[in-house]
Length: 173
Image: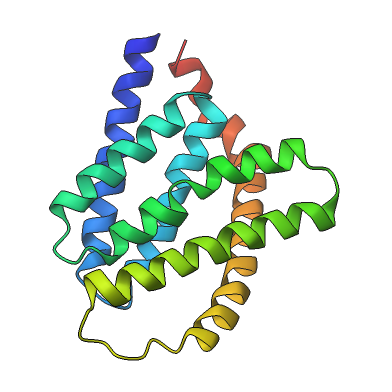
């Protein structure tokens, strides 16, 4: 059983790296693919449980740092979209107060956004002068809320419609 799960993790990590690589070829799609790859982690959270989602996250992120020609998509994946499904699952099972839940989610997102801005400004794009941080924070928070909502809807779609049809669980026994 562990062998099947490890093999599936390896295939999912390869798929994630491939999608991040495709997304890194275009400035328009790097964030889109980084967020899309997060559903691979969602799948491992649902189907494989701990510690496999962390394995997929670390392997995909580490390999992406080395193979992507433009590192921004890998940075977003490592700091946000790859780990967020794991954090989202943990927060939503432990925090039942909606206000506190969203406070912690937004606090996490803004801390990550700050780290991404600092890394982009001083390491990845040192020649760029102004990244318009106020605009980035406003649009980033709006986009984050939409991303969280879309991720919730995709999780529901998978759990209630697709999971029974795909019957992945029987393959892992």
